[in-house]
Amino acid sequence: MLALLAGFWLKIPALILIGVLVLIDAIQIPLYYWVYGKGEQALRRMPQRFQKPLQKDWSATRFGRWVLSVRGWGVLIIAALPMLGGGMWTATFLSYSSGLSKRDGAMWMMIGSVLSYSVLWWIGSGLISASKHVAS
Image (tube, rainbow, N blue to C red):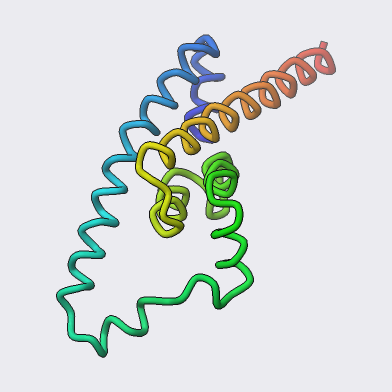
């Protein structure tokens, strides 16, 4: 969100700014998968009494059942949220936890990223145009 505001302020063309932001998101995805994979490996090495509270059954909660039912679409929605628990970190966690392949998860996340930045750009440019129109 702040990057888009900076892009407006610096008058960076939409395609360039959105392309750079999506590229940054694309770089983050493998890193986050690596972090979750290493965390899971570390969890498996812990004594069983420490593992049990951290290994929840996703189908036991309403949210967990929703995650398992929507899988890719849920990842897309979470990736498209610019704040409030959205973004690549949370979308990667959702993808990893729901069992999507890395390729499929990354595809859903990139679509969400492109949609999010495009919509935010459209809204932001509309607000700027409206404010210029009102000010003149």
